[in-house]
Image (cartoon, rainbow, N blue to C red; front, side, top):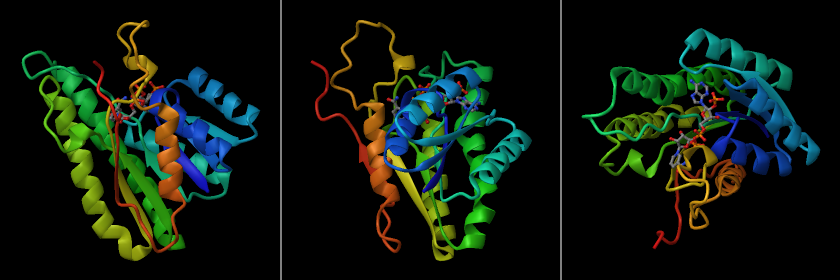
Length: 232
Ligand SMILES: NC(=O)c1ccc[n+]([C@@H]2O[C@H](COP(=O)([O-])OP(=O)(O)OC[C@H]3O[C@@H](n4cnc5c(N)ncnc54)[C@H](OP(=O)(O)O)[C@@H]3O)[C@@H](O)[C@H]2O)c1
């Protein structure tokens, strides 16, 4: 499948790109950091996969539209969009600044919508497509110490589950993905921290591969992936 992945420069997005690239999907990878995107592209290609890259700031609607249209033109189409990019700012309502609050909403909520609205006309025209929205456990369960993050992810969940109802009869699938703790290197505070218990980014990619490859008339509309054990 021709799959666009936002936030593919590191963390979960990189894991998704790695797993999907290995499993025969043609990838279009988006993020702001060109150097990191090039490294991910090289790794996918070294393993025999195909990947185009495009820098993009999700907070800018014109930039999102042009970036995604450019990737779709280079890939000669789009079958799926994985809205993975997100800012994780774990601060409570006493601590979080206005700039941090806005940046998180603009990236996690507005940016996800800008990307979605760009691919929808292509999918409607072809009568098929799949959008996977990466929410979080904090997109359905309150998070003390991260009220702004939870607010942004509850918005993703509400949008994603409602979007499913709006587009299903156009043949477009929508899946809301709820990861628990995933071992994204950028979130490690201490490099010696034990992260063995966490879900690995590529395992989220494996879940996406499964979600994308169900029978045409069958949809996994929600999927929660989380570590079996909590750290002791
Ligand atoms: N890690 C977890 O435990 C966990 C759990 C549940 C849900 N999630 C969700 O999973 C997603 C990925 O998280 P992660 O842990 O992989 O985080 P990460 O390692 O910090 O990666 C975030 C990605 O988003 C991109 N990004 C951020 N702001 C952007 C912007 N304005 N425009 C374009 N791209 C932007 C980053 O690329 P650039 O900086 O290069 O732009 C990067 O590729 C997020 O939506 C997060 O909420 C994570």
